[in-house]
Image (cartoon, rainbow, N blue to C red; front, side, top):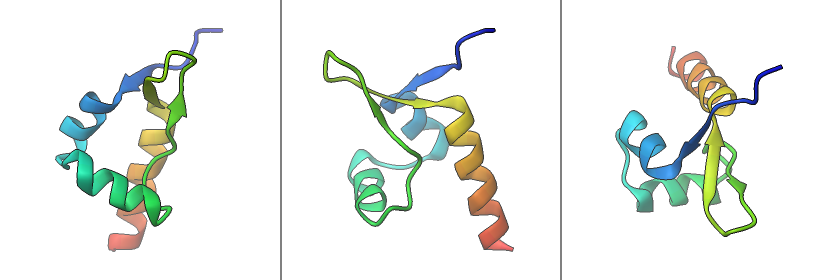
Amino acid sequence: MARPKMLKLPEVLDEIGMSRAAFYRMRARGQAPRLRKLPNGQVRVSRADLDAWWDHCEQHAA
């Protein structure tokens, strides 16, 4: 089984068209995709989590 694709935060921000500050404000409100912190301190978002977040946003926008 292949490992899930993990995206760097700048890749996520570019895809969703959001600044880092806005992303962290959404995260503080519990409205952002889940971040995973690596042992070296870097953060990643899994492709599956980001896709699920997009789906959730689309459902609530309709």
